[in-house]
Amino acid sequence: MTEMISIGKIKKNLQTKRVGRRIYCYRVVSSTNNVAKKLAEESASEGTVVVAEEQTSGRGRLDRKWFSPKGGLWFSIILKPEVKTVDASKIAFAVSLAVANTLRKNFNLKAEVKWPNDVLVNGKKICGILTESVTSDKSLKYVVVGVGLNSNVSVKEIPINLRESTTTLKEELEREVELESLLCSLLFQIEQEYATFLSKGFADILKRWKRIASFLGKRVEVVEAGKKYDGVAQDVDEEGLLVVRLTEGTVKKFTVGDIKVRL
View 1 (cartoon, rainbow, N blue to C red):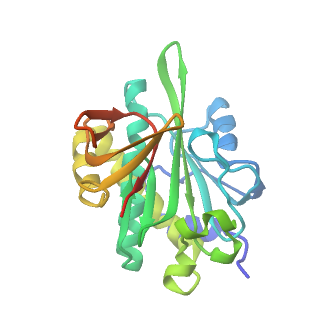
View 2 (view 1 turned 45 degrees about the vertical axis):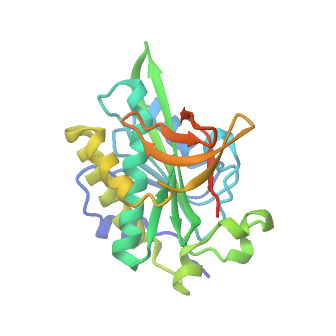
């Protein structure tokens, strides 16, 4: 049985300069993003982290429900980047790159990224990322980055309709992991990639992100606003848009959507 996440263990092992130096840990919340946004509105500092053992109303992109039981790693980070509002969503690429590289380094797993904000292991989703931006007078006030990583969760706990496309660390490693240690590794890597994003821009992040994006060059089905498109995923451009050459020969760029690799 997974024990309560220990703030003491986290603080002891944390190697970041800023991210996670102020951390709030809860047994159960509706959504860590909701709590983080409330804290941000109360002037919480950049790098503040909210972590919960369980979310009752965790959500992913397009307001979809994100299954988040005890045993997973559910956390949100408050960031205050001095970037244009339109560039805030690109932070998700930096975070997904950080998560994938952490899983590769710590557990020797072949973690990959999938547009726009998923991390996969063996072709199955193990982590989702949700960025929510808040503006004031048209300028970016803050960004909350939510990360949901299926860690010490049994596949049997996952809803039946999601089991074929979802995996967990417990399933892949055939053991449980220490959540505090994993969180510290993730926060460190996220801080590094966030710093790179701020100092070098999106191009450096995108170049390395594409190296572990196995869907590129493959036939995909993209669903956008309920409509399906078939083609080959050619690229993700400098704005973070998915570039697909459709079967009829035209090229279409997607700002949002779900992609599925066709076999």
